[in-house]
Length: 171
View 1 (cartoon, rainbow, N blue to C red):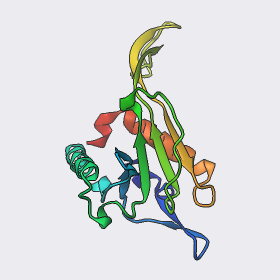
View 2 (view 1 turned 90 degrees about the vertical axis):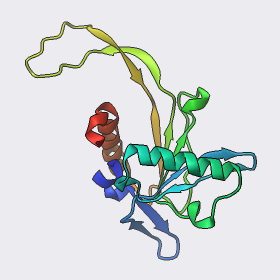
View 3 (view 1 turned 120 degrees about the vertical axis):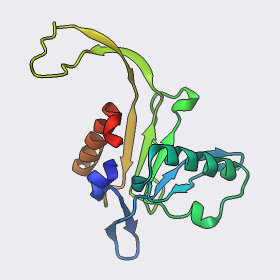
View 4 (view 1 turned 120 degrees about the horizontal axis):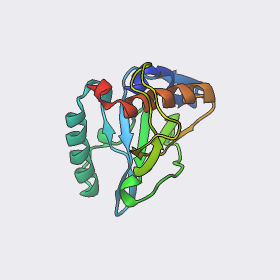
């Protein structure tokens, strides 16, 4: 959804024309570890799928990737990659872009932390230092500066953060 909000981040680099090409479809490649190395199966039109459908599709693609049963069109292409090492206890990392895509989002694991409580309305008064336990994760966006500049990266990350902090907004 953040890519729909910031379509300039959903692009590829055309080496022939030396230009960035904004993609209409949000086809998310997801890095999957296999015995032969990483492969990036694609969740096509991810922005039009419900969360449960994305989850089921990813499970199916990951299983077939590990069994070497993916069709070429299921792992070639894509407009944006996500790599998640959080499930392996990795808190933060940098991922390498998968050309011709212009971006990859590295997702680290969530950690419980004490953070300052946010007001739920303008009328809420909070004592300085009011802390609450919250699950916090780190993401790192790598981009090809020829296609996606730092301003676009920051707008994408702000949109992504908004969805992560308010998951109900994705429904």
